Length: 152
Figure 1 (tube, rainbow, N blue to C red):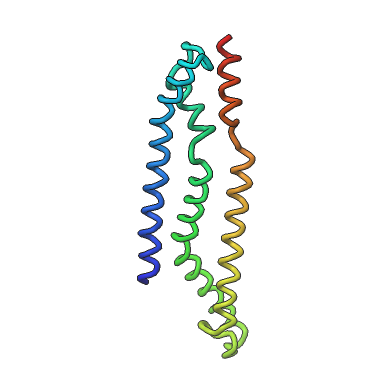
Figure 2 (figure 1 turned 180 degrees about the horizontal axis):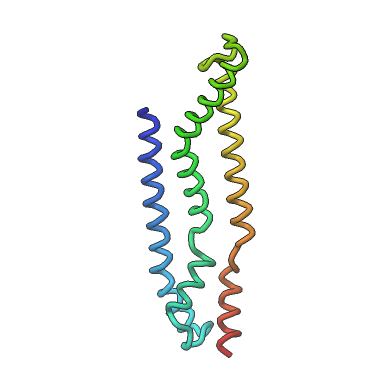
């Protein structure tokens, strides 16, 4: 149980780091806007709120957030997943005559849990990465180009 709590503490620390990165990016957006307006790359009519939103979409730690959410789901669903798997395994084991080879805790049972959990994790990550790339925001150069084109 101690390793689970250590992983949970690491997950909470990682979540704090991701939140800090979002806050840093939000604060940095105002500085970037000031510099870009001073250099003449952006007109003075661009509002800070509009720029901040576009800056966070293009330069925020989006990938890190997706990975954090996946890690949180995988870690927090570990215990319920194993409990459900064991319940199904035991029910099937009882229905098939209770062969000692397939008893809970044997090598085949443990390896089956590993394969099922690993497969579920890979499916979750594949879904998250597909969503990440499907909803990819424009890069920062495109944001600047759009803001200049929209202002003229």
